[in-house]
Length: 174
Image (tube, rainbow, N blue to C red):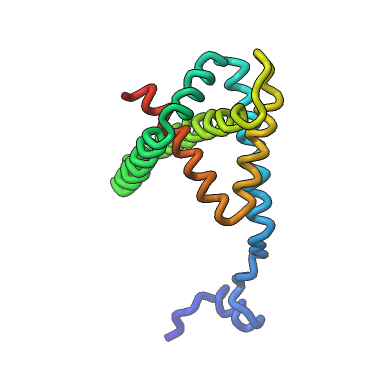
């Protein structure tokens, strides 16, 4: 009895399984792409934030600077909670309808928090003249991109993002 389908038999006779396992994985390209993505995300999200809500950005930057450890811990705990809730929702199958928007919202809040945290660091490094945000925005984006580009810097970038995430969530939830 032949358990193979006619198509799979034909593919095997042609000398292969029909599946190309060489997908062109390029770790250096992936890291560079991630760094560029981090740079652009921080720049765009930060620019939108300072254009729409500069007072909120300044208040959150002050929170990140005044309470960096508390913001980091709060952000880390909330991130673990987000991951657990998302996994539980996905496991229930019907919860996928809630899990996807929930995960997207969490990612957006992470982007906002990370941009704020990087802006706080950039402002400390280069300062800011009144309402002039261009220099801190570029430095914040460059910091995020540069840290993401390096291996160990990715962990630092994660910590900075967690601190901003925690500051934003603490303001809204706590």
